[in-house]
Structures are given as structure tokens and as C-alpha cells.
Length: 132
Image (cartoon, rainbow, N blue to C red; front, side):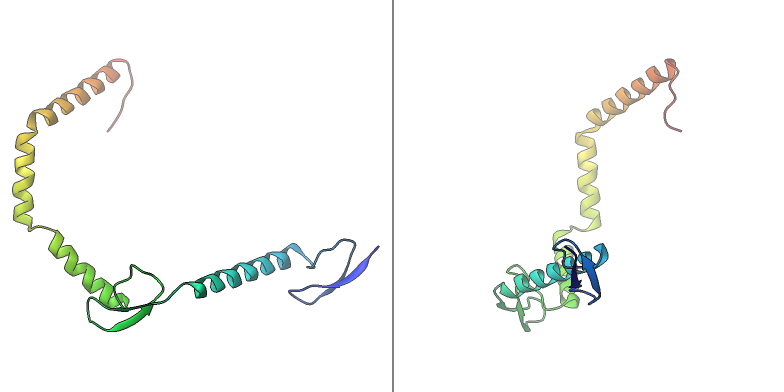
């Protein structure tokens, strides 16, 4: 039995033999997107709000994320720059540490290079070219 239905998205009246609610696959996809967005926004609104003070400027702000510590992107960027400078040692210290590490591990590094070179030579002898 053919029944006239009104599409729930675009309002177009079409005849359908099944229980479909939409006139086309496109309207069905649009309806699914609308349902998904509605569900997401309702879920977002159900999350609890936290009242916090910004660690950078001290301004109070509301958030639904427990780990958020900054009120804005500007404060977040400033805070990250400060924290990065605190965590990162000076370049001279890093160079000294790197030199110590290379001196300590020099033999291990040289043996790796020797093994790689031997493997490349063996492959070339077999007629296989690698690298440039």
C-alpha cells in the first residue's frame, strides 16, 4: 500500500510503500547529523561546571574540564612558555650533557656504525644498492 509521507527534514510530500520518514538518503543523513549534534550538546551541558582561578592572571573562570588551569588561549600560551623555560636547561648545560653522553657511549655508537657499514657492503656485493 502506497502512503503519502511528509519528509521530516525538507517537508517534501512523497509516496512511499515503507515506513521511511525521509524523502531521500540525503535528508536521512541530514537528520542523523542533527540528532548527533543535539545529543552531543545535551551531553556537554550535563557535565559539571568548575569554578577556578587562572594560574597566569588570577581571573576567575568557569569550565567543565577538571584539568583546565587557564582562562583563555593567551594565558595558556604564556603559561606554556614559562613552563617550557623552567623545564628546559640552558643550551650550554645541554651541550655539556650531550658531550658527556657521547664520550660515555662512544664505543657503542662506533660499533653500530661499523655493523651498518658491513651490512651495506654485504648488500652491495649481492648487487643490491641502497641509499644515495
